Length: 282
Image: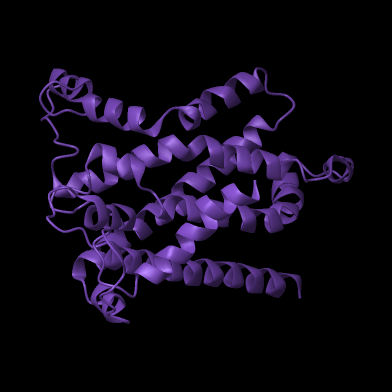
């Protein structure tokens, strides 16, 4: 186990930091030392920042749309009075276990502007066809919506697990004191849930910021890089066969910069939430 962890986790991380200081195409020894040149080029590349802002758009949608909706549904599914709760949980979790490549291909087929079911429905209603994945203005929201649908189930499970940390006797005590359901939710469950909410939001943020597979399958970052995210940007530079000489060193530098930016944002998010929590308790 230690060998597998070292070979497939530790070594790739260390190697990416080493490669980032070389102008290396992935073949032969590391000879062309460029120092911080790759990092400087990454920070000055508009395509990198374009991809970075798109990655942040995925995270913003996950934090402000997916997470709240999943919390509301988790509260509903956690109710002991709801019949068939396990069936509903399974239905929402099924997209998570489905292969992302298959999900992306199916959604792309459904949204096809010529023969897709969605556009056929639009035309039957007298509405114009929409090129969901072929237009720069609609491609990004479409892929974000697909990513939310794909990951909604795991966020729901996070919230359901967090709700299990709320002691049932607190709700019972509040009910005996005359608190209704809404008051129990806002004054008992949510305050107790706050520490776990920080963890859930960090997990959702990390997952959404590293979205790659569904973007690669549905649009490959197009059209005109309108859905390009940092992972697809790195993949294109390192592995795109249309590029005559792959730039593994530059791609590694982009990965390092992205990792550091992600760490800074995540740390800032956790610190902000913690300070706000302390301010509320004081």
